[in-house]
Length: 84
Image (tube, rainbow, N blue to C red; front, side, top):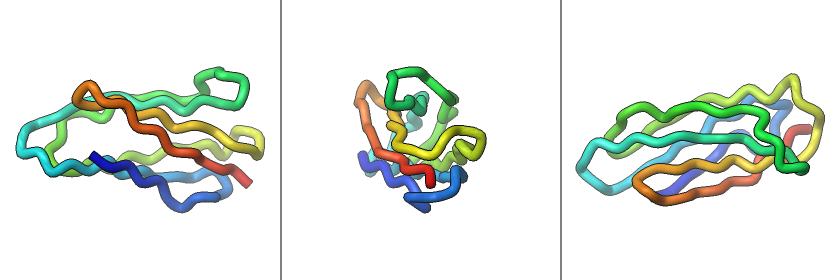
């Protein structure tokens, strides 16, 4: 599996794509965490095969670095998000 967030950095509007080579239906959840460890956004991926794309709006958050955590198929993926 692979995760990619774009555009990064941004003014707070992000999209991320989780892709896999597996041929089965998967699900999962995601969280965005600030530098203090507080969850500022979270959501579900829903059921998907091969690839799923989600939007994340952090435009109301302060500028800085956030951590995107995605859990799917008992695997954890992380990506750094930078809000200008």
